[in-house]
Length: 354
Image 1 (spheres, rainbow, N blue to C red):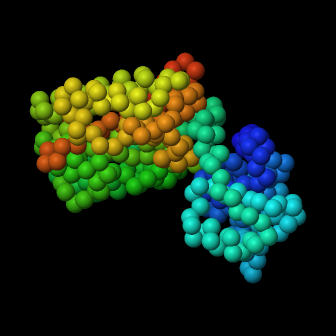
Image 2: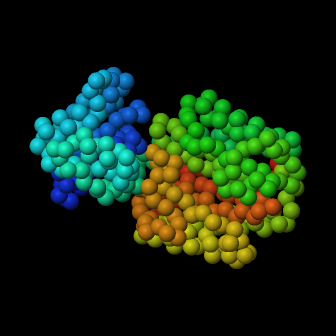
Image 3: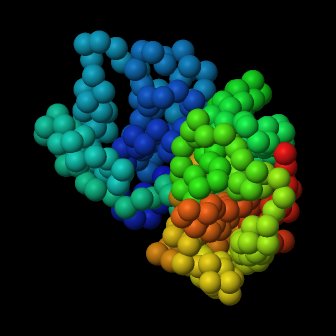
């Protein structure tokens, strides 16, 4: 179905062919799970190209399209050149993610047809998830919830950030998944670093502890963040946490079809601004989630996207105060016909642990 939509778009736009080499796009279009593969797509045909390492795997996973494999001394460029000649292609488009160095190499290898930069035709298709895709993301979210539950028991004085990081990685791998990204485990002053790295620092009473983790299960990602307090929360802890939580909950409810995503982001800043906290919120409110952790689309002041049925977003407001600490709370949200559906369920209320 996805390939048919892409072919229809090529036909409608008058493009003769598109070479898809972004591996996440290739995997999404074909179901292939290997790390090397490309597609040559025309309005009437599709050819999957990979090397001999994946010959058996491609035969098992890639159905309904022509499959071409190659090995030394044949190279990828030779296969594409042969296909273009077979199909009489005078022009082949390429994705916006192609680097200039790759473009130069391809242009030198393919003098018999023109390479044409193409708009991103696949991103709008990937942003709208099918029911089956949403179900797979939801399973990854269940594992993220379970992982957060598992590691929350470690939040107590004297435990290193690295101990928590290692334990959550082991838990995800033991449950048949991969890390969706390098987890973030930061405490105390370190929690003011939105993308800080786990260190030897030991948790202390009075720390904020922020854990941001994601599981990649069967090719689909989850992304969850929770912030805890070690020991008893102060009034300042609660003031910051409660305002971030309110931003999360209210912005989640604003994910309804037709709403500009920049407006959702603006609402988070308005809520934080009521407590003079917006100045401590520097990143966007969220991003698309799917085959990539940072999938297509953004909830940010710079985004031109619009909320639509089938999208899956992260919503992750945060406040980061240097020298004091930071709070981020993040959920994954599916935009359904009946409104937003939250896919991550680990408790959001402030937890005082240790």
